[in-house]
Image (tube, rainbow, N blue to C red; front, side, top):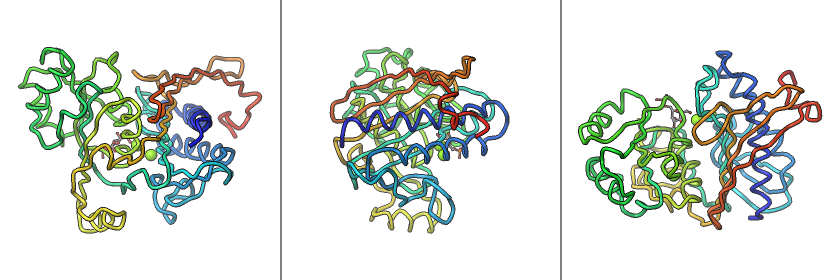
Length: 323
Ligand code: VTB
Ligand code: MG
Ligand code: MG
């Protein structure tokens, strides 16, 4: 893949973030999602690549754009597979809560797991604990291993978990160990990445969330030297057969980092929509300008860039709310 592609993808996430940020706090999650999706689709048309959506908004018959199998880009340039979540956190934007972002992962053709839209069990840790944890270990053992690896007392260790009834038991077990729990409402991707950035103070991500978000997170975690293990959780025969159609003989096999992202050359890009721990949200600064804050990284070189950009919406009228 060309390294220029990384910056091109940031232009895509920036446009999606600006368009969906107009919807913050207006109680309309679908409108916020549609705005991000349409903007993403439009800017993808200008990117020099021969891209194919492998994780997107659904199958052709259920999504008008960014559907699985759709071709993206100008057609010149690298052959890449693209995974998108145009708005990771539609509810977040509708309510004006923290940590919504627009996200893209790209990798060489065939390198991203074609995860169907279903639940996935996930465990993510940062670089120091990489290679030492196992999804099937009891959480008590994982906490001990990561505390040692990250050189923290268990009382100072932080486990980030999505606030859902399905996680009540694991939350209790973490609390019984004396570790700290940070609950979040939505947004697995940002929460997963946080484990790989020591400045967040977050050590472990554990829980069940979306499989598409899992693969996108894996591209980021790989670029940050962290570790991730996962397992698809098909809920019925239909979901099980979808896993098998996507090439998994055993739908519930353990998925390691290299099963999720096979290549060493993956790109991850994200732009904040609402304020967050990792990224600032879109800020409308008056004078028809907007400021965006993005992260882009590439697993091949493991360079991580934060990009703050100022956009003149009078010169980019398609990023204004009304268009
Ligand atoms: C998960 C998580 C996402 O929505 O898919 C979640 O991975 C859905 O969980 O990050 P529920 O079915 O319990 O609502 C997100 O939080 C946001 O898309
Ligand atoms: Mg989505
Ligand atoms: Mg999502």
